[in-house]
Length: 206
Image (cartoon, rainbow, N blue to C red; front, side, top):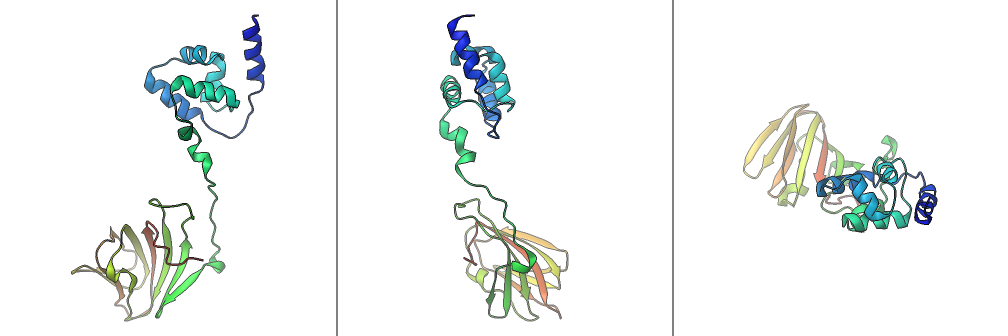
């Protein structure tokens, strides 16, 4: 065994089994460039077996190995680490702890709120409670993005610019939010609807 092979074995023994899955990205780039495992391994100075294990996420590479592979494949490190730069917590809002806000006699109960780092991909969701004869006001001026809603109780009329749509329980609707849109309760009981807005308008900030 040569000194270089011995060093490679020692380096490979230091690879740690941790939940950082670089493998898919490395494999996709390698295949896109038409490189074999053997070619990449030789250029990076590691064994073909190690590259294969990394690509299958059986091991997470030591930093020097990762840098060598990134250099061989001409990969931007930001591309590799992008999904680990941000915390991605699971957001739970308990039914009894929903933040809510009133707009005149309408109540918005928050189902999902955007993370502070979200921008174009942000989303927020509410349960709307609209008394008979009342209507929303926030969409009367239009805003960027899209909205999607489903009527869970009652009967509604959506006025979208100059067109009206009657929505019954179970009906859903989606539209670009760039023009005037108003949801009105035209039934005899309270109207309830689940509504989604993206990107988030951050109606409720707490």
